[in-house]
Amino acid sequence: MQIHLNQKLLGANEKVASENRKRMEEKGVFLLNLMSSPGAGKTTVLEKTLPLFKERLAVAVIEGDIATLRDAERIAALKVPVVQINTHGACHLDATMIQSVLDQFDLDQLDLLIAENVGNLVCPAEFDLGEAAKVVLLSTTEGNDKIPKYPLMFREADGLLINKIDLLPFTDFSLEEVARDLKKINPLLPTFPVSARTGEGLEAWIDWLLTKMQERRESSSVRP
Image (cartoon, rainbow, N blue to C red; front, side, top):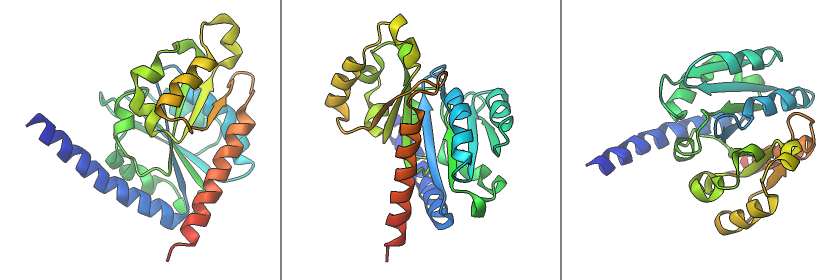
């Protein structure tokens, strides 16, 4: 019976996710689902990259948190449109939550909408938001066990950021071990070692995302 309920829940989410995806495609907006464990540095990466994105396209952010407005306030300080979703205990964003805030953005004027998911390496991977791409962020201070312990997250991802590489000399984190683990789970996953603190590697990540957006536009334009 419990499995049956889960199937109904995920099925309902998939229906709304499809509606979100269709709406984003009609508006020409690329919805990115950014996921990580708590403290990996999602908001800091956004603080560093949003000013660079703003030079090239119109971008906005949905902030997902269990409580507080702290991350949304950090994004708003960059003069980037942002809407906060507090999940009040839920460990992930879902498609209905995303749908409920879309009217708060001027979608006709947007190119990129980033949903910063709740810090969690389990539930966010199971809930489609209607996104065009999922990106997971891993930090060098988390240790090397996250990929084998949470394989679904890394199997579902379209891209991987490895943040805090400036701290590599002070940790036991191994980029070689990451590569070995990914080879078993998602061997073609594009991987970008970055430091949100120093800015190292961020241009490569931005270029990759801009290319994904262009591919999406071209794919949409050739559909019958």
